[in-house]
Image 1: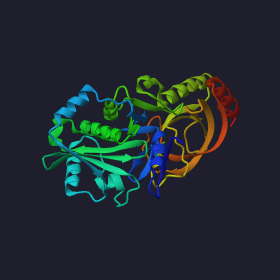
Image 2: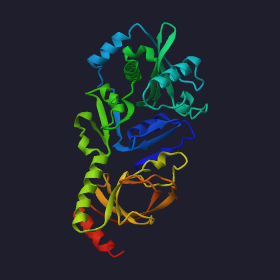
Image 3: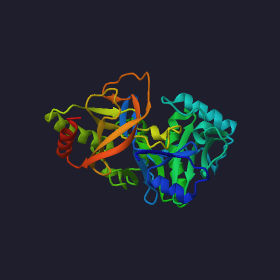
Image 4: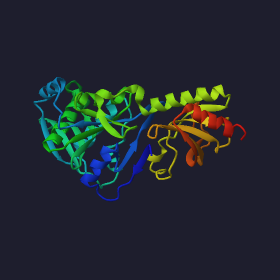
Length: 352
């Protein structure tokens, strides 16, 4: 599946966390999820998972300057407790109110779903100006891997680049623990909010290539080959083939591709492709055939999707399908060739 959510009922073993992280999963509250696509302000993006090879990581000149800039501050590392100090709560609130993007309403909500139980082996790295807490970062440790969950800091110390300093402290701490990899989450090409993660290391950074399910040097990354870019390109190619055959269809983005990571919907095996070709006219029928391009199999697939739930009062958006939550119920045909798929679709469905 391209989007999935798990609900650990027992503490996650260190080897389990390593395995999750290597497959492109990440913590969300007390749950753990994966997704390969994102949507911000109505636009769709690929989620590209990242990690730093700590065996080869060496701080850059910029990171060394940041360390020197903050050398007068004290650093403390300790196990994280669900019972946050008043200092941490105040610091997070100050940080939350200073940033131009939405954050979790509280630390408790962000890390523990407002509970008091932690299934992760979590540590906090705190930075103090004398006795004053000015920055805090949370990490989870596995056996050979770690994940950086959150950094928050006093906005009054903006010139000190405390967010970047915390990320450096996290990686260096994990190096000292003998960790092999540090996972900072994902970035989204063409959406700059996550680009700071690419500055963690130019030489030791790797990305998870979805099509081969393997980690590759970030130097080999090509925006034109992101999963969403490939899907769009392949489906446009198919659309041109269908137009030549005068077969009615619509190339649409699917609003609810990430429904499986919504806790109340998880496990329903909902359709999770962000773009597809809708055969025939988009109307009240929700069993019309649709065509997807799967970057894993590198094939077009003709499938039947039925409704899992009809959403009322949805505003019409051009080129967006948002009237139903879909479930794939039948697989009809697959092909690597756009021409072959267009031929099968036009011949077998034109009379339907």
